[in-house]
Figure (tube, rainbow, N blue to C red):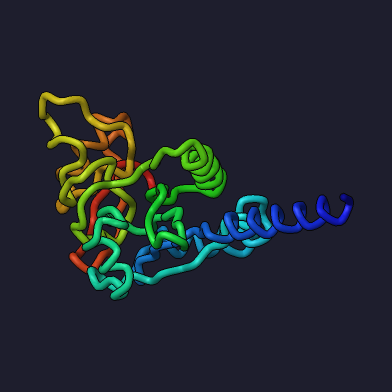
Length: 210
């Protein structure tokens, strides 16, 4: 009887371990993305030894411009991975089904990253798909993430529009300093703006440098 119980426990632990190891964190990092580099410097050194990192190992995938690795592009074409609209993007990946389970988009600070990732994992465990985007647009901007599917420079609305302006700073990326300054004033930053460099040129954003 004890032998049977022991065998059952061993099988259970093997099954549990395989389920845990089947998940990993795909870190889609832009090769020129300043926020991707900040994540690597501020989070990556400690991530493997963190509670989350021990159960969700990170695999860094470098995106060069709009060129995705073949296996990643195929996953998007087959709707196993949603559209990528900015870097860094953190994908909770099921290695068994080779598909996205959820995501966190953008990086501003370490504590916020861990908080967002923890919340996403809880939702995934409940059978939800937090942050997942539809489609396979395959386009990645170098910085941040849109709050929804928008072209660079839309900023949630054009300043002066009638719809409610998004309060998420990562939704506000503009092609001209004038647009960013108007958004900065509407968001309460007093007209202060900062810039990021991308393959498409300079991106202007409201507020102080992140």
